Image 1 (tube, helix red, strand yellow):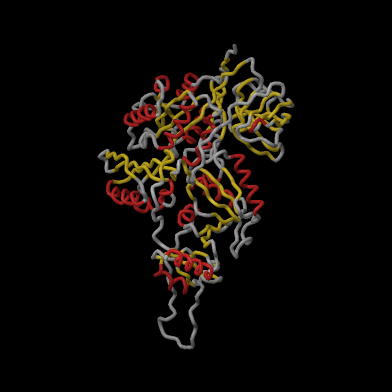
Image 2 (cartoon, rainbow, N blue to C red):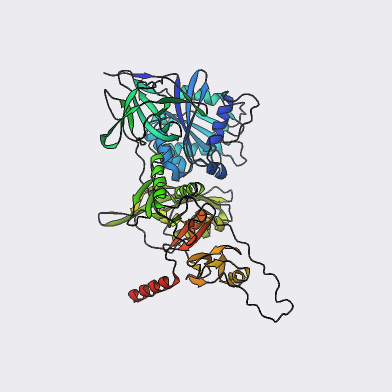
Length: 613
């Protein structure tokens, strides 16, 4: 009978929380206090958020590994994203951890993503620690938040051992932790000590040969594809001959050309590695997340990483507009396909399918925000592409049409409760709970179809004058709740190629809200504004003033145009209808009709009207 051995010189922990609850800031403080940086060294804020997009938006998009040394023990830390759309990152990160720090905001309390990540951690049986962060906020309510955390644990069927979690209070920005919210701590030493006491070291079987589960992939110009994961049993050395067990039992031989391990923020070469450590192996090209790397003598696969299935799909295609190829370097369909396939290797929550057209691909993921981030990353890499409206993935079971249903949480001022409730009910939402703390703000809970939330976030912020907070998580698939109108306005569509002219734009402003400014290039079929009414109209924003020999005072004064709100990718994806697309280039985001020709669109519309009579 095999006996498990605990490696006491190691700890593997994941930091999990809802978005903006302070995970990355807390990791910064742990780095500084564990001696990773010398005294007085200048260090950026949110060191772990290394992507430009993460720094701009203030959120974590991709899970990352690092390590700190504390009292002779190496602590591997995995910083995970807090947004529900990046749940796949959380699932693969937890496969490397033996424990987790659940971070909760002292004012906001447990929010939807807190529930999602906690459910995953409880399912994997991880040792949990709870840290209530930001207790210095004026609206902090640590006692109530602790009750909400207990309620959440009970709601997720936690056992008695899991309910008896160690608890600390912290101010991550100041780098202090304490056992009571009324105290004022000095540092995070108490938190690092608690990690050593509460999180067990990784266990392994001495009799088992080397086994490692690939949880992440990276790429080096010098070493090629890199496989990152936790060693479950045994150990490996540089130049070892190993085997990679892919899906369906396929065996791929590999030679370890380089072995690396985490030291602070860096990866450092090592000749050998110990069981339970998180390592980086170079020497294999054909490897995927979820594969097992093991010895040739006794190949034995570990359980593959499973992730929740995608709920949203979006069409990615080549840019077919008249302006194609003028701003981007990468425009061919094979380049777009190659980039999307590369994304599926690194992101387990993304799936790519071929379509009937050679130039278009169907990309499936967790939400429209995840899709928008992928498109933004591609345009920054020099791609030009056109993308369709995000659509939910519908299922059919026992003759019933099923759609993804989300549990929606809304926190807003009391005065906006009426308009928010009315808007969500028109989108087939049902209120399930309402809490009024008597502070002037209310907390509303709804059960809504996922398709209701596509395009609603911007509207919600306008309705609540920017003060509302909206979060949701996927509950399950439920019966289709019927159709509803997602947009009550039409589009202003350019009827010819040219450039925007101030005179033409000024005279079109009464028709609706314009998206272009003078001298912007336009083409037939390009959407240049939002119509006040629910139908589309063809217009000419390039129209110039007719010149005559007659002059009169006051006739030629300069026109003053209404300022145009800059077009963002999220707004563009939310705005378009089913017959429209977003043209994305490294410099521009334009809206367009899928069918550019006004004549063809007019004929199609006529045929539709005839068929409905």
